[in-house]
Image (cartoon, rainbow, N blue to C red; front, side):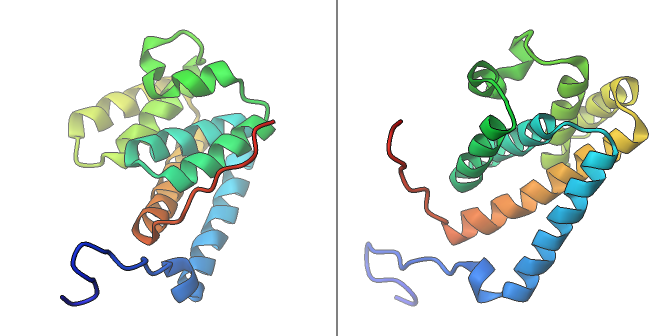
Length: 162
């Protein structure tokens, strides 16, 4: 069998380490997007909610780990983190956050035209053009990082309980 033993998959190639120039370009994009988000007035917690929601949809354990810790450092509550996957069924997110989450989901599922239209209609009502652009860029960027981590199978290691 090419590349595997029967029943044993080989360790994945960490594509970020294997192709550092491409990965550095992606991290430079992420830095530019962080600046765009700040300049648009998006809070750090909102950016992290978008990062987390997209990572939930994509099933990226590594990015969920990284961005959960980042959200907590930014001041996000455990209640809101706990219900994020079901944000539509709660009353704990603002209109701006709900619009951003819907837009991030539509960016993650670009083939769903009705999801896109509904999200964009809400975004036009509750977000400025700068905020719309920033949210889409945040979602595009975390989608890219999700794929890097998922395809590389970046490990999530336990941390001691506090």
